[in-house]
Figure (spheres, rainbow, N blue to C red):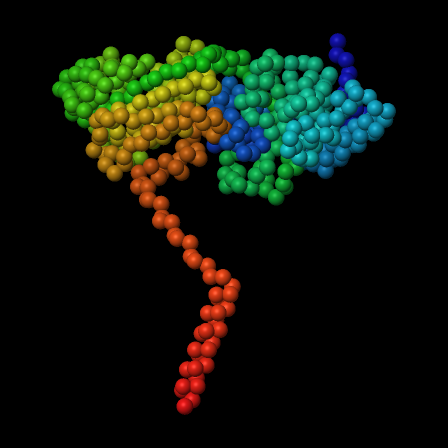
Amino acid sequence: MTTDTLVDQLLAALPPVALTVEAAPLTNVGPSNLIHYLMGTQEPWTDRPANRTDFLLRTELVRIHRLTPDPPDRPAVWADLVAQAQKRAAAMLNEPPDLQTEMELGPFLDRTRRGESDAQIKQRVWLAIVMYNLGHRGLSFDRENGAIFAQEPTFGAPIGIAPDLAVDLARARGAERFYVATYAERFRETEYTGEYPVDLARGRGRMRWYVHEVRIDPRAERFYEIERNPVERTVALIVAGDEHATRAGLPRDYYRDPAFQQAVIDAEDRHYDKTLVLSPRHGLVALDQIVQEDGVWEDLGWWNYDWAWKAQDQLWRACLNPDAHVDVDAARREISWWVWQHPESRYRFTLYGHSRATQILAEILYNQQASVETHPGYVAPDAWGCPPRSMTTMSRARSGMTTSSPNSAWTSRLSKTCAKRSPPPPKRRPRWRRSCSSRRRQRSTSRRACCRRKRRWSR
């Protein structure tokens, strides 16, 4: 039996709003940062993790449905409803003090988090009105983060919360659906408004009235079983040589370059958890796998992002073994399995040898919060002018920057990989500053000298 709370009693006195949930989900996922727009993530996005939710969205295990009010496009009327709700809450709070009333109705007017703006408070009130008109009862606010909980296993996500944290909250409460109110601070940045399935009209500021229903497929829970406990693994990546045998064989017998053979010996002496070979044609090859008809590194061309993305997908498949838990084809370019490693896991990759393609792979692993070190090995001819470098990010906090798209922020740094770093400019020695008296003395001296020259010329 559902018991009406003070929030229900307050919202029941407001005029009703007709809302319909669109049956068809939003299909155009667009760029990688779309999940931030749909779930109303507050900027800066780099501090809001969203990689797992973006993965589930692209594999259609998370579906987002648009809520359409009837009649549409009446933001003035909706703003009036929010003002009425806040006015009624203020009137109830001005009555004789009651701790329960203050705890339940305080979020209508007060901030629940540091730095929360008045627009976010209004969005939270609007989200509560939407949930009440959808038939959810027993509504209550969480004073710590501003979430709206209902009697049913559903909730309204805190305004501006990170997508991954919202999905984790749904998993903790056993909810298969929850609601988000879109709040974005800087809509005018993007030039790709045509790719978004929501109307991101410019010139309307922060007052956004979009509410979405996020539905989570029960099969998504299996992805969280891929790596439940944190692990520490070391993986050796050996660059294959360009000198091949005439018949198929194991990598030790197929690749004849002395530098490659020595790199295999060095890797085996260090006893890594996994030792893999980077091949220009096959991507990733194990030491016990038969190799035949391999290519050379120069055939990949100058820009080898496609090969690097395929290799990192094979690498994370070998490390995480997701096929034992789920059956999803993630070989596409937009998604990667690295997001399902445990947040506290540590992966150390050691790269033996160098080529342009493997340097791009190292950059991808670096931005996926892994440690990448370089050791001597086979140097491909296409690596001339692009020296390898070691990259370590074991202590860097995990961010929400999605590296699952070629439009990610790290590609700007990737273009500078082959550029030589110029030495810093020499420091200039500070000029000696004369005192005021010395400057006046210099001006007076120059003035007397000028007068002498004039007298001399007049004679």
